[in-house]
Amino acid sequence: MRFGVASKQAYICRDCGYIYSDRTPFDKLPDKYFCPVCGAPKRRFKPYEPKVSKNANATDARKARKEQLKKDEAVGQALPIGIAVGILALLGIFFYLNSVY
Image (cartoon, rainbow, N blue to C red; front, side, top):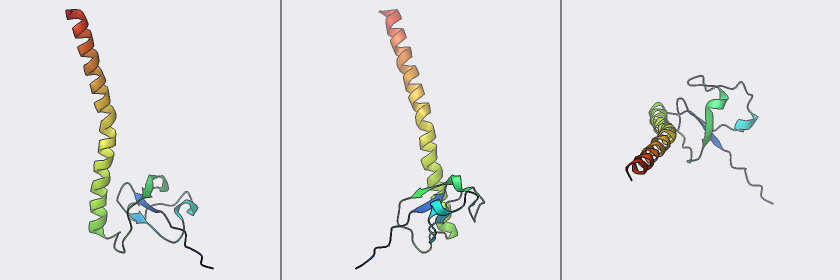
């Protein structure tokens, strides 16, 4: 009989790009766990999908991931603004056409 090892989920710090992939499952860590690199609280981590390599927490790799995280979060923040601007433009066109015709 073979027992498979449960796949462990890696988590990434959204502030500095540090990847937690130790043996202890992330959800079993105490709530007062903090990032060993930047000191961010546990709530600032999110699941990380790509395969984690041995040198995942090297300074250059973390900096590159941090920049990508910033870009990803900026897109998420800009989307509601874009939607609001689009709705206002449509309303403006609607009222303009109704007043002209």
